[in-house]
Length: 215
Image 1 (cartoon, rainbow, N blue to C red):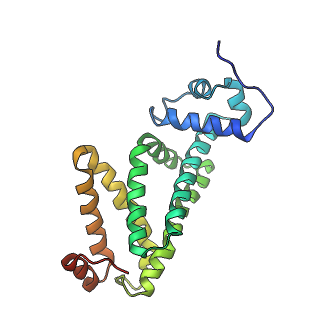
Image 2: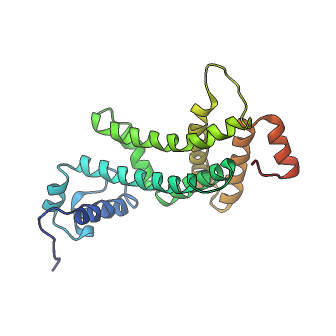
Image 3: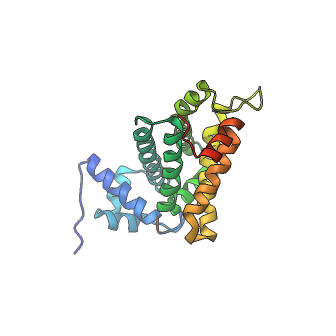
């Protein structure tokens, strides 16, 4: 017979419920996943889940936030490395693609959650914006070195490049759906397109011809 945990509240039990939810949501659609299944997977009673999370929506919000938090921590690890800003930018690009592909259903759930106009998604939006903010120091360093082009005076490139990076990474994940055996080639093609779009022309050409790393 299934043994269920009871009160008192603990961070460990909360984490167990969240991780169980992540596993379920990575297999099922946002609206297909039910609290009973998450509770069973976590080894707790359904009532225990609602003891920690007052509604299904709040539980799913915390699941999505935990996913974004994990991604932010991984990006922090890359940013703190001793390497060229472009090399770290490429590592974040690769990380974001891999992370999306491992959590396809979960990212799909995030998009569904963000389509909701209720206040409960504001925190999710703020967390997603943090990802772009973490990339900014790399962009600012590249701007300082004169590596990035300036196109529109009214818009600073550093403000849009993080979004461009994540957008291109998301596009790779979508393209791989149609060409599952060509993930490496697709990743590199989109990366080169991104570089040609943001780097100064002379820097971009030099990298293309001489295969040099931007320092």
